[in-house]
Image 1 (cartoon, rainbow, N blue to C red):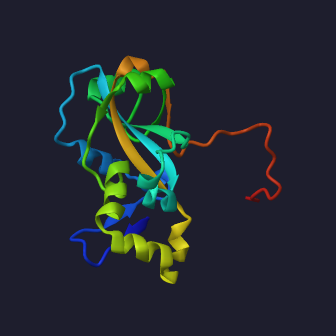
Image 2: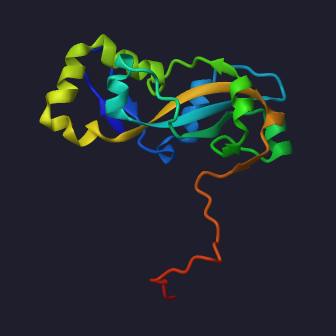
Length: 179
């Protein structure tokens, strides 16, 4: 996790560097006050973006070619058991279904607008972010930025656990573990 701390701000932002740093409990907290009818779910679109680009994004057009991973954020128990999809699973869904989904504004520090606003609202931090040698280590790092969509469960064609590894018969380990 990367922590953005401005001395004059009344809050700080922590940003995950990978999707694996986002626990399912975070999705539960973010969506606890949202009710959904059956057959609908919330998908978190997790974009991987360079922190430096986010700091200066209001000076240029938003990059639409960022890699995105859709993660199940909220689903009813009935839909979950019927479709075998759990919170935290990477969902398989086509791009047009995501685009047709209803944008959901969840006020989280890890959203695109919150990060841009943090750098815009506190220009002294943006200047420090550029010049301070202590921040060299995080300046070029990639972070996960989240946006949310409400979509029909039927648009999801499959799901994979995030940490699932396949037993690849075409890959040979050069250093096999001896038992």
